[in-house]
Image (cartoon, rainbow, N blue to C red; front, side, top):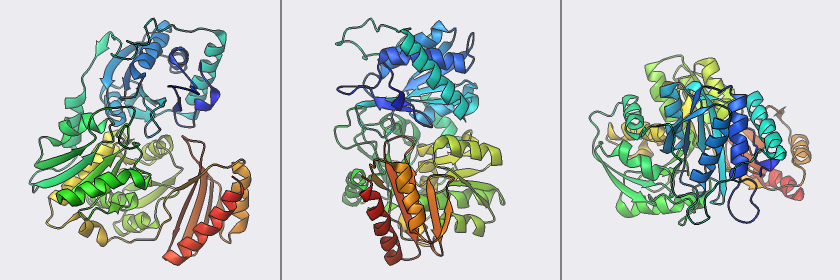
Length: 462
């Protein structure tokens, strides 16, 4: 079973567990066949990994069987974070497949693809995978799991080749950051029962860091809080832990650990735009004049910091495939998104929350001041944060937004309206059936007025 709505612009996300399931192992088999055909993998290899979600092993097994039916062989890397799968693809030169639904609820599962060298999948390839999989599913080229409900999903399928890449992944990250001479730090790490529970010990255990771990057991049902740090409610536990333990820093990861939110020593969340600015400063100090990629709804603060440090800003639509493509096209040294995705040229232009965390650790550990002091000197602009709504007709709502505000209008990524000292964006999510509003202005009163006016229009369309 494969429902068409699980195919998103960048990847695949859909309910795979319980009532309302949108895909299953038979659908994963069809995906494997379509993937192998679209990527031209007959007689060739690819890498496949998964996160800790339920049915992950069964879906991987079915996918691999489908790809094998088309002549493709799999390098199995087992439980990995998404950025660890990017590492595998970069290190081996193989296309990659990661079974994950990132920050979505526990009943979801999904697939992220990459070309050799962790390069982003193209829209044409994504369309070919979708069309081929739906055709295969409709024609009944199905795969039966051959396992009972009791033992299904308990172990990874056997692959012709397997690789425990975690030590090499950690070594790669360490090679990209100056970690010498760090003062001892106390760091709270909220893994949200996701893949950071696996990767954090390997990456941080050799550093002068006392880790206070929260929810580090891998559990795809997310029993403590959703693994979505974009929702402020899911940051509260880390904020409280930082204050309670008098920690220097908090790191909050999403389910597949490719994103990382930062909490300062006072328990305050650091705007991802300011984290982008901090890391961009470091990168531009090494390479003056380099390009830095941001998305359309990144704070103006980043542009100001990049240009003040002699860099050039490149603006891309939201989404990892778009950002990666822009990174490669401009040979950008670094990239950042409002959602705490951070991209590094030396990491095959791919996003990695753990490498961003190491950069922050390096900045903090090599200085004497607290995290709040590092960001206090950067420009700050009041922001609404991302406000999500479900509407009946997204296109109609966006058109109304464009007409309601007096400013320059861009349709490159949803609708972006810009005025003197402010901007607002309304765009559809790449991964969920939501319309997302973001607003920024020079002062809080203007931001709130713009936000409330936009929300009144959006909510009329619910």
